Image (tube, rainbow, N blue to C red; front, side, top):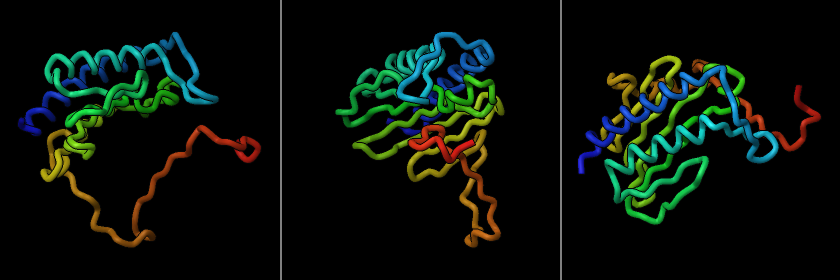
Length: 166
């Protein structure tokens, strides 16, 4: 098994899935809630089926667990997938979402792919081989002082006490 080749195939799947998701931006139907504020759409479900089908055909012995339908992780190799990471943004036509796919071996990450279809950015990493953005090597910042760093954050949309939020 060659993790580099698997990563390349996974990137193709992420791009195809991202293209499908992008084609649905602004035309949401079938909106549901998983809990109080956690949204799921038909696009999430279809995207997960797409990823599962592509991976299952190429790697039939690997198990699969997706955000929308769950799945089995009782295997040496298994996929962990969030087919539309950022559903809340997607449903509001806010173009900050991605396709996230990881392969684990013995419950440890072997490779990961995150594709942002809006910016056409493909982040990929293979264990012990580093990470790339659009096939160019990327590295962790050497800045070690917070006051000199750029810090970005997000805020969870699932709050227990809504009285403190705007």
